[in-house]
Each structure stands twice: as structure tokens, then as C-alpha cells.
Image (tube, rainbow, N blue to C red; front, side, top):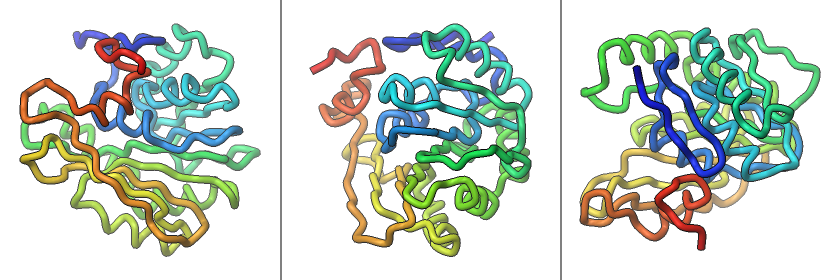
Length: 236
């Protein structure tokens, strides 16, 4: 059984869900531009990003969707155990079949992809299956369908998946912000945080280094970004 994860304002159980709490989800949940109004979390997993979202902005209502039954069950439990049970609503449904009677001000997604060669085989199979069920082309198509004209879409991807930007552009979603994420100052960029809208403008780009040259000693920028969530970081 996988142990849960205690954040400052909520607890995440993850024993039922193949996709565990990880740095990617925390980064996206802390970095994404969360506008007031309706928020959609695509591929919600444990419900981590949804709970981070409503912690950051109390003027939102969050819908989460996940095609995996165990992920849906897990997120439902975590939402029910939080103080935001009236603001976050989980749905067990595929994105392709999701047809709400509203559009969204904010859409966020931490889509499944292979992190590295050391992932457990069961997790790799789960990710491969989800990739087949929701390829990037389908993701951007349905984000375009569900996003308000003035809405924003944020996603975390591996560095190698930056062709996603061109796919999004074909659906009138333009890159506005980009954060290159480095494990430490000596390693290459592994992840990118991307923000899209329907407004084509100059891209604001930045870099984020997670650790200093010492293992488990985090950069001030990473600590500042995540201090409202991780127990070990004090609020400034």
C-alpha cells in the first residue's frame, strides 16, 4: 500500500491510484494561472491539482474528470476528506464524452507520460493505456471545445513533447507563458510548464531550478513557488 501525502491544508491518499503524487503535479498546481470562475482538471488522478487550485483561489468551482475508475474513486475520497467538498466535483468520464452545460475559465492537465525507465511495469502499462486513450491531438481538440474565449489552459509536459505547442496552435490555442524546469543547475531541462490562451502574443519564458547543487536542498525559487503546500517550507 502506498502511503499518503500530507500537505499544509489537505491530505492525499494514493493507495488506489496508479499515478502517485509527484513533482510534476505540484509544480503545475502551484504555477498555473487560476482565473475566477469554472475550472476543469483533465486526468485528475488523486485530485491533487484540483485541491491545490481551490486552496489558491476560493472564487472557483472545480470539475475533475478521469477515465480510470480507481483514479476517480481516489479523487472522490480525497475531495470528501478536504474542506472544499462543496467546491470540487469529480466525474468518472472520458474527455471525449464530457459534455457539460458550461465552458471553463481555466483548464489544467497533467497528462500521463513516461517519467523515466525506472517506473514500475504496472505504472508504465497504465500510462501507455492512457496515452492511447487521450493522445495530445485529442487533448488540444477538446480543450478548444471546452475553454471560454478568454480562458487559459495550463499543462506540464516532458521537454521532448514541445511539438504540443504546434498542435495547440492548430486549434487556436497560443503559447503565452513557458517555464523550463531543471532538476538542478547541472542537469538539462526535463519538464516544461506551458500556458495557452486564444490571444497570440509574445511568449514570457523563465527557468526554474528545483534543487541546488546539494541533494534535497531546494532552490529559493522552488521553495517560494510551493511554500503554501509543502510542510517543510515556511511561508514568507
